[in-house]
Amino acid sequence: MSADPATLPPEPGVAKPDPVLVVDDLVRAFGGLVAVDVEHLEIQRGTITSLIGPNGAGKSTLFNVLSGFDRADRGRWSFDGTPVTGRAAHRLARQGLVRTFQLTRTLSRLTVLDNMKLAATGQRGERLLSALLPPLWLRQERDIERRADELLERFRLDRMRTEYAGTLSGGQRKLLEMARALMVHPTMVLLDEPMAGVNPALTQSLLGHITDLRDEGLTVCFVEHDMDVVMGISDWVVCMAEGRIVAEGPPRAVAENPAVIDAYLGSRHDEAGGEDDAR
Image (cartoon, rainbow, N blue to C red; front, side, top):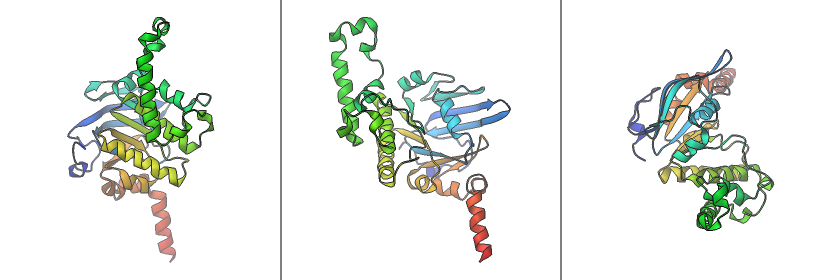
């Protein structure tokens, strides 16, 4: 980790010592509904940042815009020091910014191994003329398959390498999608609710993989609703409500922030208070 986030002031838009992603004045609206209105956000390199907030807060929309799967109405952002506003998803992936989805997007009629190999970029065999000359791409193909097998072993999917991806469980598809994202040797990974629909055993496995990525120097930003997960592995937490960032800081500071309690924990907080009053 390049800097200790705990030393930074817990306030929206706080500057980071070494941000890998910087966002300014980003707005995305759907008709009259403003889904995202982020004035300033920085993601510190080499950390695990959780993005929290109630349903409809704009978290996934923000991910979609930053990863090139949607377009902003206004704003600018840079990745690893390079302006990338409006850049397409495949170009961002080549630069090292990749993401996974809440609903996994595996190719069910291809094998697990083929799903992995498809994620590799710059494959010479994909070009028409090169494809006719195997010596031009066979070595690269072997290197790609070796990388895929290493990742499948790491995520404990190696025994499933020849199975169709459609036969995997929901949790295994989450693992496959995370492993596939690493095929491009990314700098930053955006994970959209990686624990959703995953059984407790695989949840622990996913959490271990996420912390391993951070420990290896990658930057991880993920959307999550389970506050136990957020508190357990996050270095920094950003809370959104109604499209805006209402708080950010270390996990404990954000959990105790009145704006977060109102926006994200309000219903639970009120229920707990009501129970106390009833007693």
